[in-house]
Length: 95
Image (tube, rainbow, N blue to C red):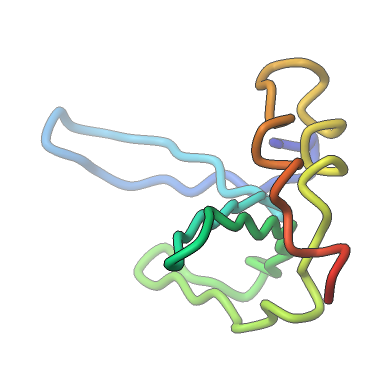
């Protein structure tokens, strides 16, 4: 979910000079299985990388406020992935 305002970092990798874009928003889906069934949890997280230097990365722990329905995440992907099976077991509605 790269945006036009997402910051670019410059550095080096094993091949030489590298440039990587860090998104201000990103999605994460966690799937777990208990004794009975699978469960899915979807999150859209925001991170402020304005103060991050080229040498350090820090992501805050805002899981609860970032908890997002998987169907919402699927919509933001504009058809790139079908998450309907995960949305069917999403735990967000029961929270």
